[in-house]
Image (cartoon, rainbow, N blue to C red):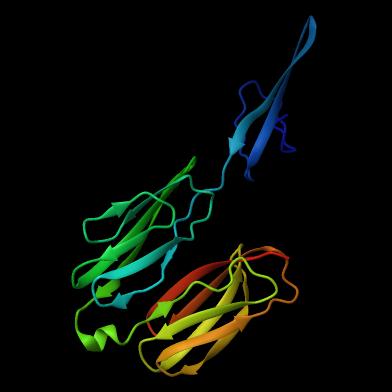
Length: 223
C-alpha cells in the first residue's frame, strides 16, 4: 500500500506518485507461517518539479539603475541563483541589484528544489544608458499597493512609448481571470485599481504586456 490509493502485489514493485505530498508506505508479507506488516510513516516525499520565473521592477534607465527582481518560480524552490549579466550574482530569493554602467544585460534565474533545477533567462532585459532620451522613457511595472490587500489594490505602470497595453490577472494555477485593460495607451505612468469580487484569498499575478515588453508582479489577496 503506497499511501496514495495505489497498491501492488509484486515482490519488487515500481510505483509512480502522481501528486506532490508525503506518503506512508505499508508492506504486508505473507508466507507459510502467516503474515507480517511493516508500516513506514512519511516514507516517501514527492515534490512538484520546479519552474523558474521572475520579473523586474524596471528594465530601462540611467546609471546607477536600481532594479528589484521578484522570484515568481513555482514548485516551492529552496534555493535561487541570480545572474544579472554584469558579472554579478546573488543567492537571495528577491534581490535588488544596481547596474552601474551603460549596457544591455541578460538576466537569468536558476531555481532548485528536491526534484532538480530549472533556469529562466530573459535576453537583453535591462538596458542602461546615460542618454537623456532613454532615461526619460521607461517601461516599468511597479509593485501593487497595498500588498497583501483587501478589498482592492492599485497597480501602477509606465510605458516608454505610445502603444497598446494589456494588463491581465492570473490565479496561482496560471488560469486567466481576464484583462483589466487592453487598449491604446499614451506613454507615461498609469494606475489601475483591481477590486476582486469572487476570488478567494491566495496568490495572484498581474501581467503587463506592451509591444515586445512583458512584466509580471505577484499579488496576495487576504479575505
